Length: 67
Ligand SMILES: [Zn+2]
Image (cartoon, rainbow, N blue to C red):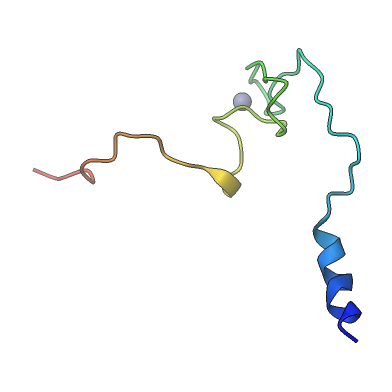
């Protein structure tokens, strides 16, 4: 009876079958008119995007050293 375990896994599937992202979209944040790439599946620009997958690029040498 292993099927019972897989039932929960089904929840991970995205409810949206439509994965097409139209062009010309803009950030959903108020006051932000940043255009979103059609490859961006989020509705926010990279600045307002939630922290779910934030990856700091480079520039991580020192942690703010107080002189
Ligand atoms: Zn934005």
